[in-house]
Image: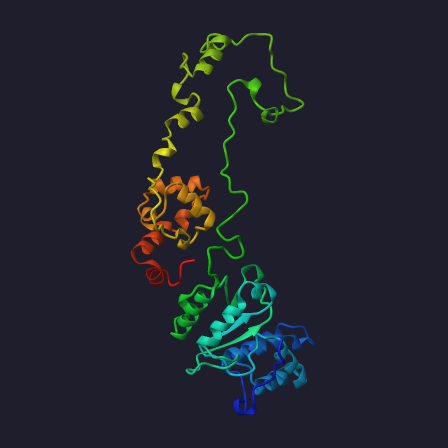
Length: 371
């Protein structure tokens, strides 16, 4: 980490004071701390000064020190220690902090730094010609599993490639940084595995027992209370509707309506299963492998393993996926054990856009490059 110093005198304003809104906020913040501990407010006050002016000036440091009755040097130590505080003017639209610690460096942080040098300025902390963009390299920003990543003001942009960072810089340069969603720029939720969950993904299977009680697992049998009355096994079944125990047992085994029994309610699990359509009926129609199959991994949610599985079903093109009906999507979702993910990620829409115009159309519609 390089030594952090205040900006040259030529950049420093003569004075600093909080505006009316921020002075009220600062005074309320100081009151949150116990008597004698008001100096604990130094970091939030410095951050509010930076948000007001865009960077932390020497005059701001002195002003905060006076408000908190602190020596100037103590406030200067805080401001120069934390890289969240900018000590010279930075880009008005974006200041990009590239994490250069080991995990990010192993995952391509150097390539991100090259992008900043080529698109903003060869030197850190120097602004582009318009004064709207600047950059620097910083130490760990706490998103190692999503490396490489950058911070732009208060937002993190993770799992970056050089191409993705170029696109992000272009959007901020155009004043459209809000179009870019912070967080992972690949198909993952926060720090979850890329491509979706990898554990506990099997659908819950219903437990079915045979009609013969003797074949049911011992664990399934309920344990009667200790004070429960014992059933009288000396007398045969006398329910007049079932005639005899043998008749009832035979009727249950054959699922045959017996006198006094509603056949519509007999063996409901088996009846429902028999009425369900065969899942193979909804399987999408596959094709022979074309000479140049589409790169299905461009669809968010499809990785190498899923692409190989789809190819095994004869799915090789975006156009095929775009034409899937709801029943076909549900079939594939069940086959891949995705639990609704195909609908959540809207594979059909992504595939339709990619089939229409490839990467350029995808960026136009979704505001980012396909993975």
